[in-house]
Image 1 (tube, rainbow over the protein chains, first blue to last red):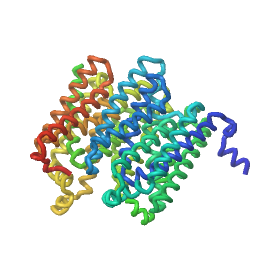
Image 2 (tube, rainbow over the protein chains, first blue to last red; image 1 turned 90 degrees about the vertical axis):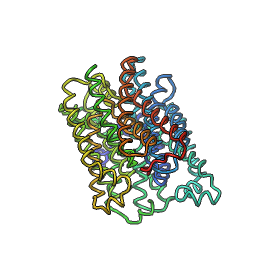
Image 3 (cartoon, helix red, strand yellow; image 1 turned 60 degrees about the vertical axis):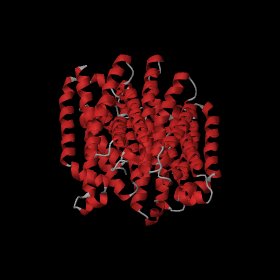
Image 4 (tube, chains in turn red, purple; image 1 turned 90 degrees about the horizontal axis):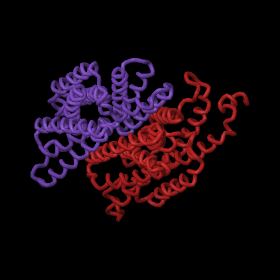
Length: 291
Length: 265
């Protein structure tokens, strides 16, 4: 038994400080992303989530340029972009996708410029990789209070607006008849998504953060059609995949071909995808209700 | 510099043509995901030491078909998102195996039009021609199945097969445009100009032509500006796409409800 445990948890796993930080920050980020993701999927806003993730590259690269914590950059641009998307957004889903895409394209254009300045004006050539693909094992301990704050705010939005959000997600007409301010809840939801994206972004990277937002939630809706339960499942699946990903990445330091470890983000994404395909194959018809 | 102009012109034409159908079908997310996922193919190709465009083509096709397959069984947006992140994750893994990536990855993601070599022009032109030809041959059924799937099915056009054809066209267009404008910003070129064109005219053929023209202007301006300032070309492409869209929306709004596009979703 202990042999097996040693095989799973490579020596030094439990005493390594970077691993502790990664487990804590990664776990929090996954928890928030999973819970917020349930509403992203329910509202059919996977694309908005993905676009916010891409756009936060802009904030991340700008924050390296002016020397503040990337987390502020991620969250700031995310919230800003959420506002712009809502402003130019059209009610029809197709128009919404287009508006989302245009905002995303413009944001990424800026990101290209900022990253270019980052690499030419400073010696930090790795900025592009860090911003795009995250760096779970190099997360600094100073960031923990900020991560906790963002997590509480994002989960708070979801908890306080749970009923109106749910109603306006399932039936906007019914919600507005009942006196729910649909537009307000829509923006609040986008801001919660932006916060979740910024948390995932520092752990598995901006352009991969879609995985933690959409994947676990989509898997959860395959398992149950009850939104409350699905939210809990999604959070649990997200945390589980992140932690297993961290364990595997720690083990992979001895793996071929480079012997410097496979990226954590790769493991997390692969696990999320596998979970979804498995749930898909298990194919419960009840998941139809999530449509 | 001549290479850059030639490459950009080919890319502009293809993006304008393919983008028109992207906008018409409301396939913004897929058009966004396929290029980003294909980026992983380029990383894999550089790891194995094979041609970049082959790696791109394999991954773009695999991604497009994967989206088609998964999307058939579940919700399309989720399938797209998950296939996309899986491919990006693979790309990251490939990158972590090689050592000299930092600059190359940047140019693949954000474009490096000034680095196009003479040898790259021919495959680019051939792929572009193939893309435009397929679109021309399938023009009527593709248009009909995009605008009115039910009546297309009624007149004997297989909507699923058209969907597949569209994904394949998208994959080809992606693998050729990616090295030039970059994985993250192909999409701006494919959506900004066509969206603007569609809000300006209601006739499909005119919109198609306008979309190509706007895409060409966007890339040409982007290259000239990038050459002048030495800033990444992707920045100008992204900004240009957004400007096109904004201008189109404004002009359409100005004209009021008079010119409601017939082909609107």
